[in-house]
Image 1 (tube, rainbow, N blue to C red):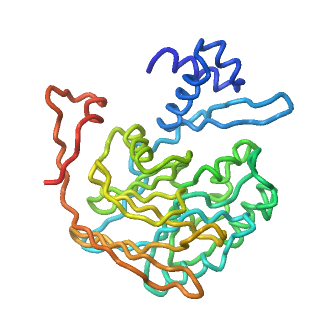
Image 2 (cartoon, rainbow, N blue to C red; image 1 turned 180 degrees about the vertical axis):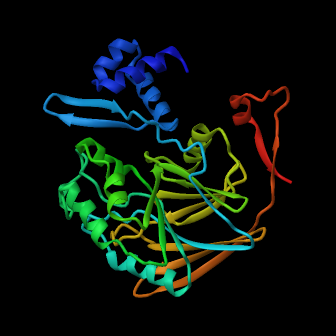
Length: 327
């Protein structure tokens, strides 16, 4: 890590203004913003705190990068789970009925796991956001609603990461993951922003970007975060879009739509995902009056082999620059 990066991190741990960062780092504002974004892409959570003196930036003590698999699920021949995202509970358009339908579908189909990709709550309003969009302004009220009303089943386990809306609560001194974990033993927290799940011999990345950019930038973020672009499947929240593509790392990427009733959402749904032998089945589920299957897509899954670039060594940087190709 560069000395200037180390200096910026030490300053951010204390909570400093942008002006002080500029004077101490001797960087111009545009270069400093790039440095901050670079640290965020490496997994550090950097939060803005607004007070009567202006804006301060402060960094979390612990990076959010999950460099090891958080959960391993044995898979001999077939494993099915549901995935949802962006429920924004606490928003005026929250729809707990949609969530109940997802979990009822899971029980009816004997599906034991639901993955949640973040932005579980709406969180506090930003400085440029109208509070009128928030149904419950107090963060404790939002989390209390989650722990009391989020669907619960003896037969279904929820694995979840938390997104940027959830992380805003840190500015109020509240880590909602700790509250949920203490009150709901059926809901297992895997991390902020990213985590990975091992299903048999397949690796799935759960990903919730913290910035609004586009798919290519999000894929670059995955490479910078992990230095290990071997994920068979990337499940991405945050975009509120519905889409499937294969990125340059040869990973199948699924953008999972939002699961609440905002009028700006053109598609609201969930996905049923099945790993079966060397095949991946993605089944979109439409959330309307009833939950019903819509379209399905099958992908072949083959082992990946690391191909080193000419003259590369075994360093982490060279592994990052290497390409994974399918046999």
